[in-house]
Image (cartoon, rainbow, N blue to C red; front, side, top):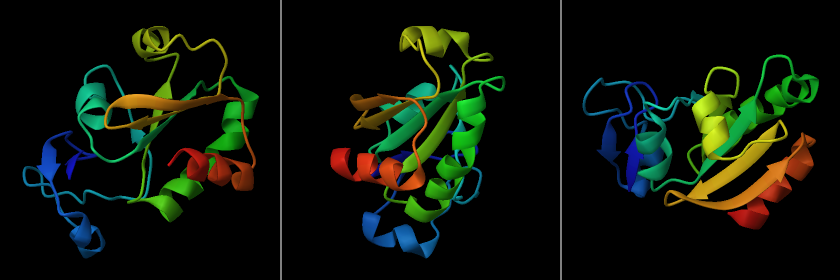
Amino acid sequence: MILACPSCSTLNRVDPAKFNDKPQCGRCKESLFQGKAIELTSANFVNQVQKSELPVIIDFWASWCGPCLNFAPVFSQAAVELEPAFRFAKVNTEQQQQLAAQFQIRSIPTLMLFKQGKLVAQQSGAMPKQRFYQWLQQHA
């Protein structure tokens, strides 16, 4: 399976059977699974999302958004609990306006689930943990 390093965005080929063996990036030697969301930018988006064979959940958010800030701990906890089944990533819509425009983000938080680089599900609005996990399972 191809996945990008969360630290340097280098693409790595990893056998899914070895996900629990704490695989490291072939380039920077950082862990490929860090149990936290990756900050996406225009520069790392292609490798982290479009070239990754791992399902990627993106949280489009902003620092001034109350529901975004309330949902952040749920998203962070999911990254710890559900990685390596999913890769978790965040896009700060204030800093990454090009990505927000590209995906026509009109409401935040907006969650998007990508599989094999293709958008397969989208949800606007914060969710409690149980409903978020159900949403992930429904589209996994």
